[in-house]
Amino acid sequence: MFLLGYDVGSSSVKASLVDAQSGQCVASAYYPKNEAPIASPKPGWAEQDPDAWWTYLKHATQDIMQGKNPADIAAIGISYQMHGLVCVDKDLKPLRPSIIWCDSRAVPYGKKAMETIGEEKCLGHLLNSPGNFTAAKLAWVKENEPEVYGKIYKFMLPGDYIALKLSGEACTTVSGLSEGIFWDFREKCPADFLFSHFGFDKELMPEIRPTFGLQGEVSAAAAEELGLRKGIPITYRAGDQPNNALSLNVLEPGEIASTAGTSGVVYGVLDSITYDPKSRVNTFAHVNHTAAKTRLGVLLCINGVGILNSWTRHNFMPEGMSYREMDEIAERIPIGSEGISVLPFGNGVERMLGNRETGCCISGLDLKRHNWRHMTRAVQEGIVFSFKYGMDIMKGMGIAIRRIHAGDVNMFKSQVFREALAGVTDAAIDLYDTDGSIGAAKGAGIGAGIYKSPYEAFSTLKKKCTVEPSRGTEYAAAYKRWRAELQKQMQQ
Image 1 (cartoon, rainbow, N blue to C red):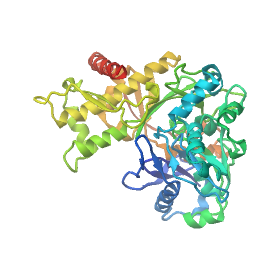
Image 2 (image 1 turned 90 degrees about the vertical axis):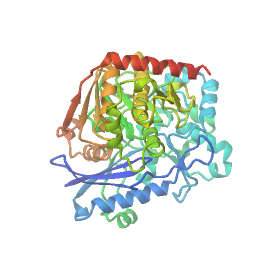
Image 3 (image 1 turned 120 degrees about the horizontal axis):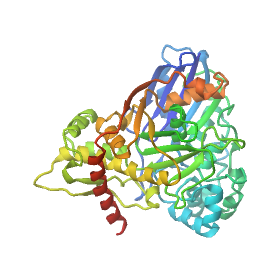
Image 4 (image 1 turned 90 degrees about the horizontal axis):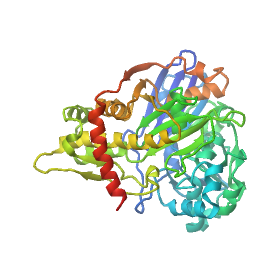
């Protein structure tokens, strides 16, 4: 018996088959093999075609199903890029490209909502500023594309759209609504006051279904397209960061998960309703949040992480150099990159900087002494120091960060990155052999009742290694210089 998990990211869609009994991944694939395109028609915009995600998903599914019997798949789970907006018409077709997570056009709409509704009301009920999230993006469409808005049947998050394509049913979750800033945590229902402020008809909201539980079944049309069987239940759905935390068995207060892919994230779990007064980090419903048991995820997100490493590789490094080769070169450069500091903020507005778009900045460059090799380390250290800056905000909310759970993927494969993160934060890092699509598959097993609890589902999770903090004094000195440069940029 297999569990099928999808992870719908902005770079690719990954699919994994997990053996339900052993908990081991038996097949995985992703598509496209190069990074998926992100359109930017105007500065600060970021869009993707929702049907491109479906095309990628079909290719990945075909790859993992070779030699497998579709009848053996017991359930499907979906993880997806958070905060995006998909608008569909009555025929369930997208009306425009998706406005994805790193698009910053809606910032003024969120800011105006915060000012009009009031900080106390927004933070006390939404736990966030409306900021640049899905609700504000829908407000942008309403004002700037009224002909599109007038045709909307349902607004959706990216994972909702994939579930729609699989099942033909439009539905969402409390966790999803909370990440879109549509959920009122005090009243435990959709935020009527926000719908009223923006002038949204609540009929545009999809039906709410549980994060773990039946969310639809694979339709005959989708089964034919994907080579699956009709009727497979879809039993789990969550945004990529709550799902990553689930993948790492991070479910209870005080536990911390982290990722460093296209964006960088630190995600901590709380059992009380709280928020950052400046909304620099954000609080959402975690996958195991219920009306009876508060489980909230505090999310620190840095937009320009993996994308900065990728940009550096393509623009600074010798042609054909791999990321592993870059890591090996970075290891030979001293801590502090001999004075170079990189602020990794060049991929849209940064929430932890108060929704400012400072741009990426390289300082301390000595043309007589430095070369491209120094950049390999300076970029990774700059990313790490942005994590440290945000984690200090989380600590101010009462989240103790002593141990970080992460998958042994993306930038966590870099020895420089993980040793620098452990060193500057004084937190041990446990690296596990898992990823988002495997977590989504196991989430489906929980939702289908195949596993009695998340702890049973992740009892087979294997730790690969632990990175202990070291050389903290040297990293602290480099971070101090980096932070001074950030403060200088913030004052401009």
